[in-house]
Image 1 (cartoon, rainbow, N blue to C red):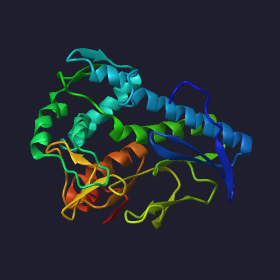
Image 2: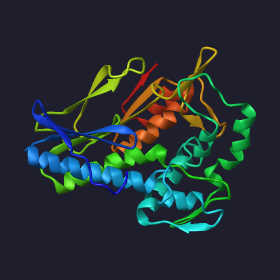
Image 3: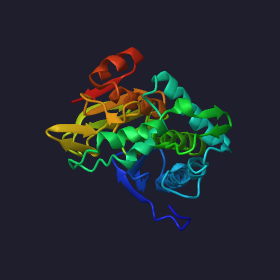
Image 4: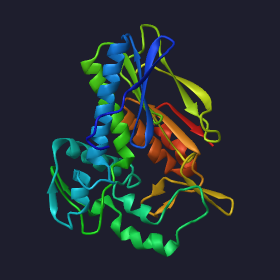
Length: 300
């Protein structure tokens, strides 16, 4: 997003709450507001939109004016990062260790040869293999707040950025506005409180086979929900479907993964981490999630 004026917020009444809509992070975004009037709902949505766009500007790998660009073009030199960036990198560092290398923010370079556009164009195995020396968080020097990437390596916070934005927006709304809110960025959600005493937010889990169709309803009073899946980004070759979540250790999608995994956790960031790592377990996704003792829904 540029620094130009924000477009008008789309706000409408839906039952006993307000719904505000905008786009950020290549996703449709919604703020559901309960216990406030139209003016309060509009102010809340404007705050949410501004915060989502701030995070997108700061952490998008597609910009040339932010901290990610500075890190990715550091040519092996050390970069001192600000507190917010350091917290995200610290989470990614912990996630890498907890997942035994399955969650790796240096894996974005693999997108140079993978394009999940629904076609049958698989990259050559030699092309994938040529990029693997540039993948591996264990090669990075991280001594907060100093980060040093080996020359040629990059980081990509896309695997955590949207979920972080959901949590940030939810916390801001809870602190600065009356009423209660459900934040929904492209199906990744966070609620800090139920819509009203004795009620819960009703959330639909989308079918991986038919866009816009909910196959299950989930009640949410607080906490986060995130979904990982291949419904929109995939390749199909010789009857085999390749989802867009790549194993950084091989450079290839994991075979026999569920079509989608939805996880509920204390925060959206935690839920997103668990759903992504579960997808990387392939047919072991359900066993992995049972070990985490968190609510989850796997769809094939």
